[in-house]
Image (cartoon, rainbow, N blue to C red; front, side, top):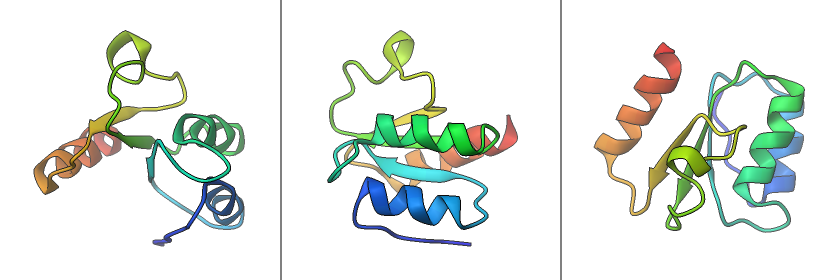
Length: 92
């Protein structure tokens, strides 16, 4: 099941009514940022990994990574970086 959304609020609504194996989200979005979205998603399904895409790595990676985010990918995102992130969160 694949879904694209225009905002964090729309993503949360689709997630609540769907069945997803992984979520890839941007940090900067309308209504809810990616970190907050990840927190809300984990309240619904703790087992679904969340990958956060961001151009602002400081405060989102390493020890500062939000607890609800499973993996952070720095923008611009390459296909290899996204494949690596997906492989890491799906295999763990």
